[in-house]
Every structure is written in structure tokens, then in C-alpha cells.
Length: 246
Image 1 (cartoon, helix red, strand yellow):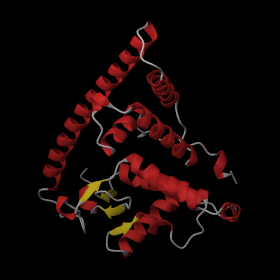
Image 2 (image 1 turned 120 degrees about the vertical axis):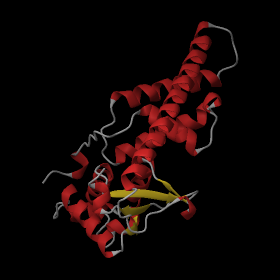
Image 3 (image 1 turned 60 degrees about the vertical axis):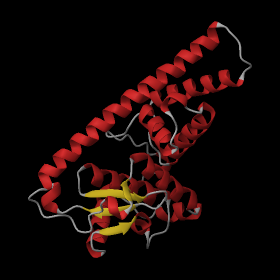
Image 4 (image 1 turned 135 degrees about the vertical axis):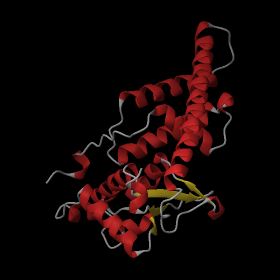
């Protein structure tokens, strides 16, 4: 059986480096046009490490962005001076802010359009069980929230369990079925940590569960939410009549 560490995962719905930067800007309530470069560079690099821990295939664009951020950070730490290098770095920073703002506008427009489409689809459809709303204090979790949560599970595992896991094969399909079965038994709602309960916390299990959840979200079977200001993530099952109409 192929060792988990040798697997490299490429996800078609995976977002790019600008999406990660915008996520960090929004998470920290930074001003897009006045980003603390040193702080966001460190956080960006931390997320690259999290992605590596989940065996995600980091494409060149992520590394190019990392190099750009490091260059801007290094230049800004130097004494103020007037030269072509300093001017070029300021241009890079301004261009980065412009791209982030354009992405923000695009995402907001897409979100509003999606909300209108969902409202139209759900008007005459039975509502999912335990569907969260704004009054619940929950916000929809993003891809990078899931990466952070599953990377934390990887850190918590005991390496000895990785050897035990070699006797088993955790497939994405099996983990999808397990998550849906658990949601059914839990009344349509469960906490992320419950998806791996009853198993040795191995790297293979965590990665297979991560990919299974991404696929369930992609096809509309599951939605994921977080309480505002907290790290816990909750899964909500969508009613079949709703996701089939999506």
C-alpha cells in the first residue's frame, strides 16, 4: 500500500495565493491598502507549512508569492532610502493591494449572487435539518479554516499510529460515507473532531477525512460553519432535495 507521506494531493477547487492573502487580511481585519507585510508574510508561510503537512501539492504560484512577500518584507526592514529597488518594492506592494482589492470585490459580488440563487432554489424546498443562520452566531468556514483545523489534527497525532494505520486503507469514498452516516445518526449536525472519533489519529486518516469533507462540500452535501471568534468547526448536512437542485 502506498504510504500516506508519498501522496501528493491536487485539488481542482483549490484556491490560489491571492485567496490565501485575502483570507489572512480579513481574518486579522487588516486594511488592504496598509497591510503589515512582516506579519502577513509570517502567517502566509505558516499556512504553506500547514498545506505541506496535509500533502497538498503547492503549485509554483504559491512559492512565487512567498518570494515576493519575503522581498517586500526584507526591503521594508532596511533603512529608508531613495533608489530604484525601494521604488520597485513600493510598486510591488501597491500592485498587491490592488489585486487583493479586485479579488475582494469579485468575491463579494459572487457571494451576493450565490445568495440570490440559493434563495430562489430554497423558496419551495424543504429546509435542511439544523440549518444555521446569522442568529446562531455562525459564519461559513472557508477552505483555509479547514486546512488549519486538519493541520492541527496532524500535529496532535502520535507517529506510532501511522505505522498501525498501514494495516488499513482509508479511502476518500469510505470517509465520505462515514461522515454522511455520522451526520444521519447525529441529527444532521456534528463537530469536525467527531469525524475521526473511534480511530487512531493517523496521518492517513486525517488526510482522507480532509479530502472527503472537501468533496462533500463541493457537491453540496455538507456545509461547514464556525462560531464567530472560535476555532471549532461544525458540519451541517443539507437535505437531499436541496443539494440535488443545486
